[in-house]
Length: 402
Length: 182
Image (cartoon, chains in turn orange, blue):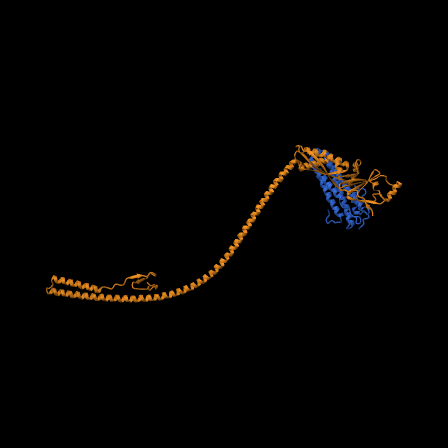
């Protein structure tokens, strides 16, 4: 099985120049070039093919090349320049002063890329340096120039920290870096893609951050307190509501019980009322009957009373008539007596006087005899206001006993 | 796998068109398919790089002359070209056993479509290069900033279209048949 040759053992390695004689072996060796890797062959000082996405067989030579070397039928110098063709981020540290005198430090990100056709330009680096190029080495190549050409001039135009953070500054810095660094990067084979700076906090920013943190802590505490108060208020409201609900439930229970009891009592009362109504009707019926009976008796009594009164009036009339007749007879007798006395000449004043005296006495006696018996004094009933005789013991209309 | 030994006649005009810029191109004939694919990709990248170089010249000059708007436009166009080149660099190339895909073989019709597609992409990229050349020419002939920016945006639009068109090519290479013609 063919052994694989690995030219890159560290992610920071960007490119490596390999001398074919250093990896020459008896056994065949191959290298697998992934899509972001490329290899330029430099044979006898000339740049050969640049390959990528390929398995390069027999990179170390193997037995055939060893034999060819011995007979001088192969190249005398064989080098392979491996490189990463993907974008590479370089973080270049810097510390520069702004125009207001404040100091800013941080890192500048430089994103560069090696294009496949530019890989041989890396020989410009390897001509004077070790055959291994990693990020640190490239930063060493470019750092000072980037700082001098790009960062310091850009910072010198930057008037404040706020401007340093602005997108306009970043855009300007990127364009500035692209313009200033193109030639150097192109010489080394790199293509500039992007650039931006990431500055550390300045003292003013630290102070502002501290203030912001304190304000935030205060606001957080306040928010927590508000939230706690709100929670307590909600719990209080919930508790009160629960108590109110329990009270309402209890009240409803009691009200229900009372209602049931009242309905029971009401039912009894209605029963009693019905009983009382029945009794009342019965009593009223009885009273009506009694009233009817009493009224009948009263009518009968009144009718008898009227008969008695009529008979009495008749009797008084008869007595009056009889007295009038007697008075007329006496007057006739007296007139006759007076006439006889006058005829006889016996009509003296004494006789007249005696005559008048006797006649007066007679009238007085007649008056006493003819005097009409007065009916008894009448009163009224206290219940029905009906007229009652004084000697009645019970009202004939309502039956009330006196 | 269906073998396309020779170049079909109906795609011959496209092959001839590609040969105008790629002399060794013979279509996806048997035994040269991977090389043809690589050559097409390299040509597209080369066109992008050419356009980028023109635009970067304009960018640098405008930045020094404080024409920041033009510089920004040129930089944006360059970024688009970088993205296109990155797309091409990291696009699929196919497998050993099945030419373009490990899952299925490409039919003759797909290969013919691919040839036409390659021709169209290269044509668009050539237009983009011409426009970028016009940008630099316009800048050197004292055209207005608006005209230069307009040309740069035309170039960017062409590059973006090429990028989208190229992604459709990758879809074909991935073995996925397209339902609609791009």
